[in-house]
Image 1 (cartoon, rainbow over the protein chains, first blue to last red):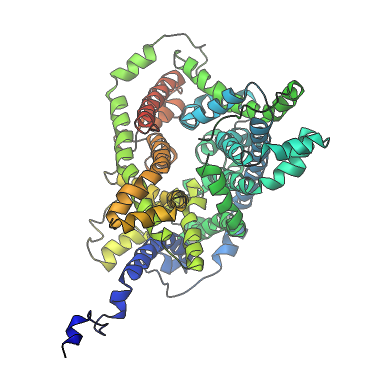
Image 2: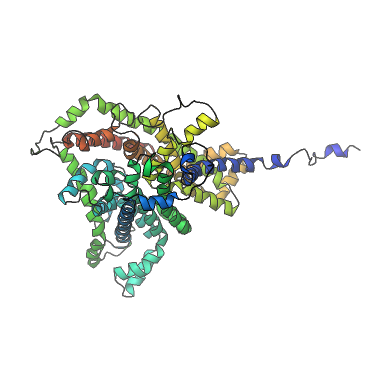
Amino acid sequence: MSIQAALPTPYTPTQTWFARHRSVIIRHGVINVFMVIILAPLAWVLMLSIKSLPDSMRGQLWPRKFDFTHYNYVIDKIDTLSNNLFNSIYVTGATVFITTFCAVLAGYALVHLKTRGNVVIFTALLLSLYFPTRVVAIISIYEIQDFMGLINSTSGLILPYITLNLAVSVLIMRAVFQLVPHEVMESARLDGAGPWRTLWFIGLPLVRNGLVVVFIVNFVTAWGEFLLGSTLTNDQEVRTMPVVLAAAQGGMGQWAWPRIAAVYVIVVTPGLVAFTFAQKLFFKGLTEGVVKG
Amino acid sequence: MPPLQSSVRTPYLRLDFNAWVFLIPTLIFFVGYQVYPIFRVVWISFTDFEFLSKEPANWVGFNNYITAFNDPLLWASLGRAALFTAMFLPGTIIFPLLLAILVDRVQHPRLATFYRVVLLIPALIPSTLVFVLWKWMYNYQVGPINYLLVEVFELFTFQNAPQWLGGTDLTLPSIAIMEVWWGLGYHSIFFLAGLAAIPKDMVEAARLDGANEWNVFWHVTLPRLAPIMMILVVLRFGTSMAVIDEYLIFGGFNRASPTYTWTIFMYDQAFNLGLWRQGFAAAIGMIGAVVMVFFVAILLYIFRPRG
């Protein structure tokens, strides 16, 4: 009769579905709050860019009337916009290409070619990360650019831009090249390939994850650079997009809120789209290069 | 840090030349735009160089440094940079750590990937575009933050709604919040990489020994994450002491503004005021940089690898 009492209490229906999954629900709840915090500003600016002009002055997130013409307007009517966009693409493209080129060669040489200066160069690059060069050096960089006649020149920006992430890029490539066994490189050399051929045909395919990271890191920096861009140029038509956007006062005329938001969306989208394509390679490269380096 | 070089390699004298060819492009830019400018700025800081002046610069020894040390604005501006760092640094470590620990436990593979992709989005928005976006977010007219405070939660009216930017007392916390948002995902990804490297059976063993969640976190997870946390603290300490773009965009050159830190002081003197007193500006820059490097060195010493 009393066997029932000796058994552990059986499952009772009063323990609800919520109670059983409580920790999972709380976990996903907290994560999703963070996700909303991350995405909300972007969603807001996207909404702003498709609001009608009167709605843009009101706070409500959901407008009473949508207006998708702002994108056409800013491309047609803002004179310098195409200039600024072109400047940004040109400066960023050149910076990314040249920095990646330098970083691949240097990373390869630091790991797989023996030189006596390796340790010195590596140390100098590493130390430069702990010094606020970007801020302090600008006085001298202005002087250099002035000496070369590159003040107020779009192309002139490329030179200091390359250096912004050069040290980081070389260190990433060095870390990635360290994952390539020395024997692989050596065997290519024994087969008669010079260092250039070894790098191009054997090395590069093996470090492509790291390459993607270097590419994206440099793209993000150059695409959004402000300090040098605003200091070394004066005229609106030679400036890059972020410098113009930072100086623009939202409100009236061509910079009415939905229009300036449309410009913003145009400028911010390419990077995000490029990343979604390279996402897998990027994560792999990030763990290989950055964390271990 | 991985070991620098393995010693078993055969030295190839012939390759020495080749290796230097590979290093030359990097060295040109690194020396030309980083090493030389630093030494040049050190030299300028000992002269009375004014960029727009016709007069040749004279060597003035430590005069610029003495003037700077006697200027209360220098101390105020260094203090403001430190204040910002104190506001920003804890948040940018703690929130990503919490988020990473939560995301790390997500089992569902699709969701886990989705969360990671969202986490990286802010890191892929270039710096100035983050600042511009938040400048609008904080705007009193169209900004959603004041909209929420005034019209949705009715905590304020239009008359007394907080003015976030433009040199008010709220400006530094506002910038700190923005910076924490910006680093939230990127730092979480760092911590996630660290968490993935903790062997699962270590955690299991601790659990079997009767450790609760808190004990596991304190004795297993945290020590394993310490190296990554150290890198983040040191790097972010450096960047937050030397912030300049945000202050230029949000604060301007008002000397009373909390954003008038040593970086803005330097920039104001070098490119804005009078005949561009770059000698004095260089001295301010060097003082700020040395203070920063000094504390970074202390941090590196505290976090030095032990055992």
